[in-house]
Image (cartoon, rainbow, N blue to C red):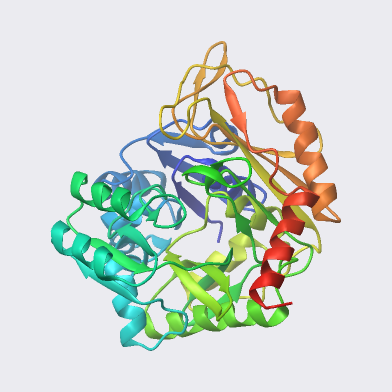
Length: 430
């Protein structure tokens, strides 16, 4: 039968998902809190609604006759949108609220890893009392990462010895209104991401990606939702050994084995340390920007994966073009602390040239597309090497201009990649 797919979400990640689904035989509908112009051009219809309101999403799914749903962001998963769709008979490729806690509750995440002896779990403690957390910082022999237990859009973590001092971390805890704080040992190394399609215990993994969270070039400044990312033509990144990738996949498999009934995407953010691969966090959905590295090189039919998951059939083995990708986000001036909106976006799919363009948080008006206060758009270069892909992305950004925008041009450059390789070598004592 023909499929009608509902896409939930309106960011750059969802634009990438929409493009993948639009290339299939499915009829595509979307809903989001914003109107993404890229998604609007691909979907039969886009409904603006609160995607954290399960009854509203369910009602729209029933109205359009959805047979499948793909949930992009974490907030709808945490709100129980997958539960509501499943109960309405619409198969949602995304975990139900209870399983989504692997992302939405960092305390649950760490306790779960500990209880099920999942490798790579750092030492941690959970606190409900701010003063108790501050006392723990004073007593701890070493640096710590301070993590709010709930969702913060990738911007809530403070790392002592890197971003803040111990005194600043304590002030952050005292001044915050978080109900729970996780303090865990600071992991030092090189971060990477491996994402997996999951259903009925099957785990199908994708190439490793490295995201760049810090706002400014040289990995300086505050954390963001992600300024850009790159992947190599191989499954592993240049600073990784094949065994590092295998260790990450084994951790994902162990997690799925323990998370009974999990379906959707499981995203593992890992740290390659001197002691091996450790888990920074799990997410219950595609990464943004990492989806924009993964989906353009996926040659397996995405819709076919969704249908197999719904039907309880084995997930197909995933195949990818042996090409590298580099994704770079353009963000408004002042992002993420004091973003300025209203700059006109001077790029479209045609002027992006060889690069892929993905719109994120923008405002489409009669006279053009304008920035808001979050990430604006991403360009993705795909090439035979990281260097070739980076060059394609930069050509597109040159066409876009930088008025009212800021970009991390160092992502995917030869110098930055070599810096990662050298750092990993130091960790191994090479």
